[in-house]
Length: 218
Image 1 (cartoon, rainbow, N blue to C red):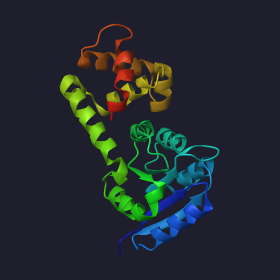
Image 2 (tube, one colour):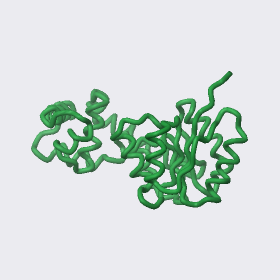
Image 3 (tube, one colour):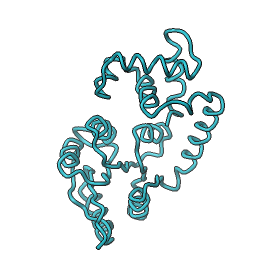
Image 4 (cartoon, rainbow, N blue to C red):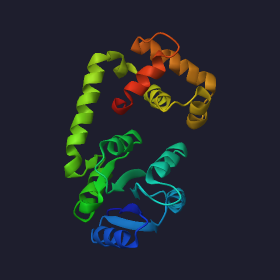
């Protein structure tokens, strides 16, 4: 017997939750383990049930979808995130991917696309609503170009890449240390190693690089 993939639905509109649930539960390989009407409730259910996938509305009361995603990362929860939104904004799209989103689905096509999105994410593949596929291509092109321009990026370890993304968010070494649960001096060592690999010199060069290329730091 194939184990079902457990799903959480979080949206402040009951009709949207109901529609998504009906479509998802029509598939035998998915199980909806709960619904949340706001971000705080969603976070609690994710922590309690640890579903494989959470569908999060970007705009919710209490905590927005992005806030919930950040908190799940900080708590080292492994739930994959699919964001649900009515906005076709490129900045929001890139912000979602920066937060590690595995899927990005537009509300006006959610009932048609959500099963495909869940199947893709459950199999370890990303999913983006068709109207936004151009954003993904542009993003990958920028990442590829940056990697060619700065070969040292390919030499960064996963932890160093995460530190670089946090630097781009203007976080201090102490704040980064708290988020990654490491000593702040370890963060300083990571900063030094990153600068050396990227050929950056000067006290503000690393921050400047991180901020300028934040969108490309996948």
